[in-house]
Image 1 (cartoon, rainbow, N blue to C red):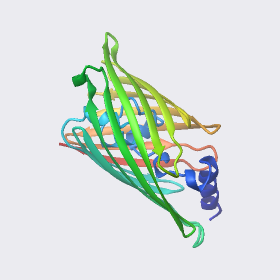
Image 2: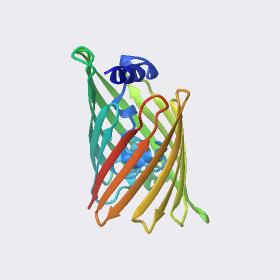
Image 3: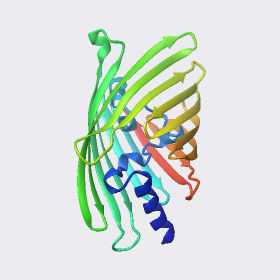
Image 4: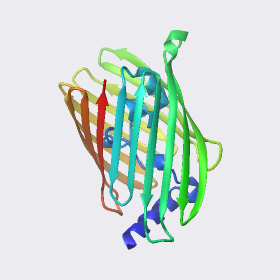
Length: 263
């Protein structure tokens, strides 16, 4: 009981109070969090919508991604995307007694556009975030907008990427987050990614073997706390499973399990 109360208190304090708490700040997306959340310049699949809506412009076919977070809070996300369009639903909840329960529902929908067709070497995208929150029997809702661009550039050393994102540009109840990100994808399956945001700094490293297995690790500095991430992923035909371990210096580690389908 005391651990849950402490966890809820830490969430509220670290995010600046009840009005600032966001389901989307909990680190949804198992592949992304295996890289410490350094994902704005990668933004792959339906979970990429959480980090940079411009990633929707690079989707081929139909993508479905889901994530379950197990730890000191319960959270989950399921999203679907097809070329240029995507949407997702998320849930966050914890209970520390009848008068301290906390829950949040979130909806995210966006579209991406290949701006190279207009003469710009970029992908662009926008997404709308809506979330409804209930804490200790009191409710509120908020609406925000994500705007992102993503550049992809070929080099003799592999693909280089750069991204700029404004998340949760608020229509009430949220604080905007500004993201400057970069990534490198080598021809040998190695990737490195970096997100510099107004809330945290994240560095991710990964290695993919034959496009079927991926090992990931990440570091995240947020609110004076250093957190470590480890992740694994495996693809079997059209199916993909992912796992991420994310540490916390004051609480027990959280675990994320992901399942995805590609058509």
